[in-house]
Length: 68
Image (spheres, rainbow, N blue to C red):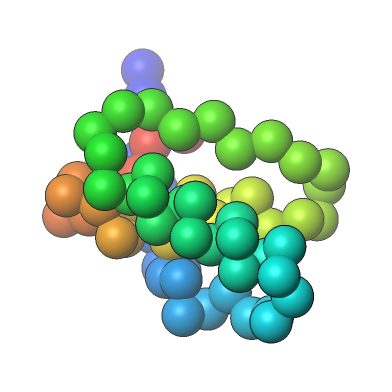
């Protein structure tokens, strides 16, 4: 059984101006335009959850549940 959680964060909640972070946000926005699964990888505390929710909320599926 799949559980759903609310997605509260958007790309506006991701703060930072580094080139690497801005590139990651651009890539995540592109992922939000597609309809395919997206795998986020990174060390603990790097903001994967913020990116996951932001992608979901910017996608065509934003009205549906965010599944993990």
